[in-house]
Length: 231
Ligand code: ADP
Ligand code: MG
Image 1 (cartoon, rainbow, N blue to C red):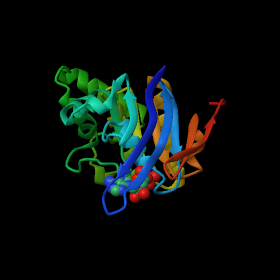
Image 2 (image 1 turned 90 degrees about the vertical axis):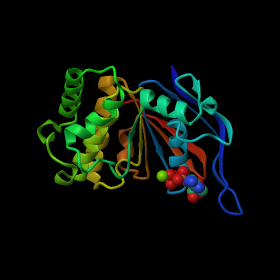
Image 3 (image 1 turned 60 degrees about the vertical axis):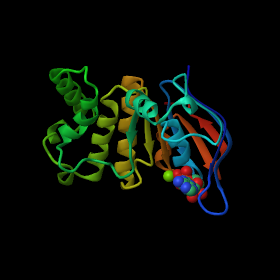
């Protein structure tokens, strides 16, 4: 079933005299429970596309439908609520809160969801930290763990609200190759285990092999798509 539908989307940024076309009449459909990567050089439109998929921005032309909601119709507050209940984010620079422990960083998005009891919250956090191999580090602060470990925590934090979609914009950009590959593998394991749709972007051609579907972007256009059948 299609979870995200991008229909003939164009995105223009009007900053200076000349508008920049970040995406050009782009269409793509992403199914539930898939593990998808967008690859392409810097400036090819990866972040713009992921921002649209995360209801962080709106297209100039065309339609973006996420989980049956046309995001064009949402105001700022509605967009925020929509993101909170449907989407988890993993960022390039980890975005940990430095004064909170690993446990508390994962807890943070759950505190917005009032219907979850403290016990339930604790169970969820510990389960996810265990899955990403960070349970024994739960009382550490972000400056006491490595970049790869921070990104594992970020994956746990993205999943803790049971979102339908996890969006990771260049999640491995600040990691060495081996660590990057591990983080992508963990995302893949989580996708299989929870059935969450994972979408990540990268310009690293080596780690992209882990994805099941790979789209290549160039100048705001999808120039190639590849579907893997062996994983
Ligand atoms: P990528 O993530 O692949 O590096 P982006 O989506 O960030 O690509 O950028 C695509 C194009 O849009 C680039 O030419 C970039 O300079 C431009 N762009 C992105 N965001 C903005 C913005 N907020 N304002 C103006 N131009 C932007
Ligand atoms: Mg980018």
